[in-house]
Length: 294
Image 1: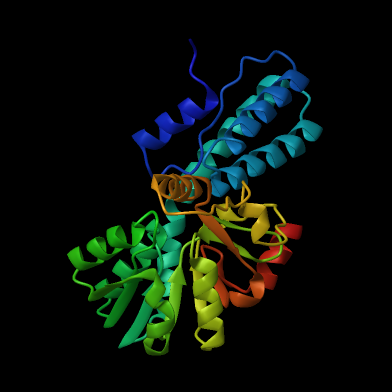
Image 2: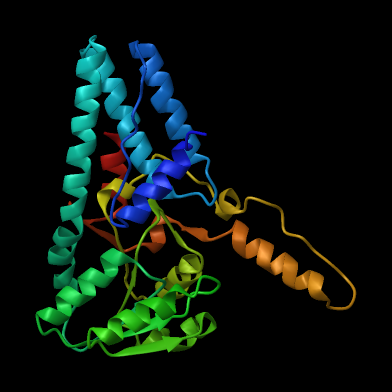
């Protein structure tokens, strides 16, 4: 049996974890069939579980380019060639984005700064390593990031690179916020409103940071800008909450485990995000809106 689009994608990512997006192959013989094939492949990736918002953004970039190209080029072979070239350029450019972001974001990190970090992000790790290589002296407080525990992964990597780290439970964020100079998070996606989709717990950290007048920066590649317009947290709760009564039992653990598998991100509205540190520079949420409207 031929592998599905999702299986091919997973295989690509396993081979190269830094790859941003796979390029789909098609045996179509007409332009309309080609467009249908790529649209179907895109929909299969976008509907896979768990939802990957950066994949959704990448798929939409391909479909937009395909739509523009199909209006300019009638020849199917030329269209396929241009799509393939677009994909190759996309991967090559994406490989340089994190270095550009590190060069841009390092100016935000001052000597003796205390940084609060939530979850694990490759681009945030690179930024902090780059700052340390320039002899910037700073400390990092890392949330453990339940339920993924990605904060422990981030803390271990920072320690290996000689960066002072303090790992704290997520529930201690309010307690330590007054000691923090800035908050750094990554991004699963940046939406049309200028809001942020990121690992579960980001929203409540942003609320506390805003109340304490601490800046929160999302460090992200521009290919994670996604054409979505969530209205509230309910758009990310894929199932209704399950309420139970009576004495505690093993069923409660099952409900908790199911919740953790269903929900791994939350939404931070734009007024709580100070800036996005991207390969295109430091952008305000309104600046992201303007880019996505183009």
